[in-house]
Length: 268
Image (cartoon, rainbow, N blue to C red; front, side):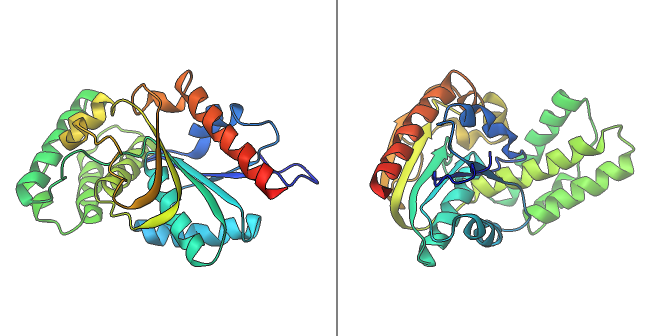
């Protein structure tokens, strides 16, 4: 939603979730004040800090030195947090980072060859159940590959050779979802002393836990307490998928609307 002509309302910048687009934030937009602009940042490739560096100039073109309100669901929260740090380093005024169930695994996600092999075995079971694809995967080769990009590249090549009747859009969605979910699992957020609010669901959804059992547990602070110095946790309920839809998103929208009103009050 663009800023109305003559309006100085503080916009909300939202970042795409894992494997998805910012269309996911439409229910949130409906719960914010009618004059609140919202701008969506879609997917770019690369490590988190490189993605953030690509977004920062786009934000500054719209909002200059601020004030900034950044939010994201899933991987979007990791991106919002990284962008906030880079904006602050450039002297910009970041008021709020909203993490919508951006919750780190409750247990360490291992990356040993055995665990990589097990991860792909879980993915093969998911692909068979979801898409009816029952192609044998080269588990040893995947376990020996050096990076997530190499691993998913091996899978993409295999799919092309297999002749599996899977639409290209689904294949690309699986590629980006895999890389983005791995980006959450391997995220290493740094210290940040600005205001951060974590809107927290009760749990991850079953598919996420089946693919990565470490997400079956979660810390009360979502794993952010050690790096986000001014962290507020708002418990929303529901699961990771439900939180961006009604009725749960109404609670997120109400809290964020109150915070936007406080920013407007302080700015006038």
